[in-house]
Length: 210
Image (tube, rainbow, N blue to C red; front, side, top):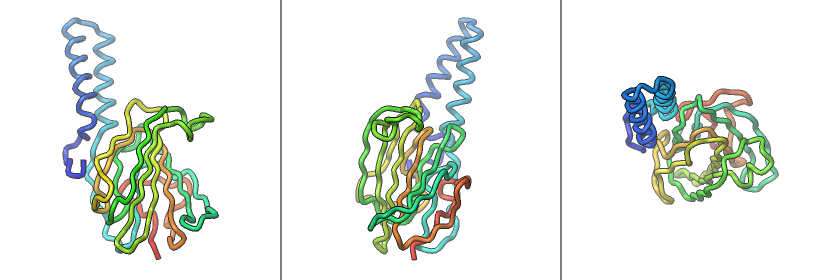
């Protein structure tokens, strides 16, 4: 996925292909409603799996960019020796689904747990929904922990990285359709975002390590 420059993410090829096949079959059989529904599915999948190319802004070496598109729901201060800030970002079907590396550095840790796809308001969603936890570290030993959790989605969380892999800021590392992203930032971090702000992956500056 890191080098996929096609306008559609490869993870969407199979669904778009099936929708096109269904549209062709229903059209040949003159099943008007089903043909129209299949056509809408084609448009929907193309939209959900769109893969826009984005230029990473020129920033300081210790900058952190948003890994996802979405709205910043909350910023909380934690009583934790390792992480001070907890940011929660809501991504919907209207947002680009690609996940992008927040900093120049290494993926130190990755833990993917398959599970349910309940609404984020469901009581058990935080315990049983599908999720992945990742920890990125830059060249100065600054760490960012990111958790992606699915909401009501028709697709799994997709990852195209492995632990200890070197990643470039803004590069694609996965895909999540309709989910919640939580970012944990250490005490030496200066925030540059506010609650309610619309974030764009690899474009919006979350802040800097000091």
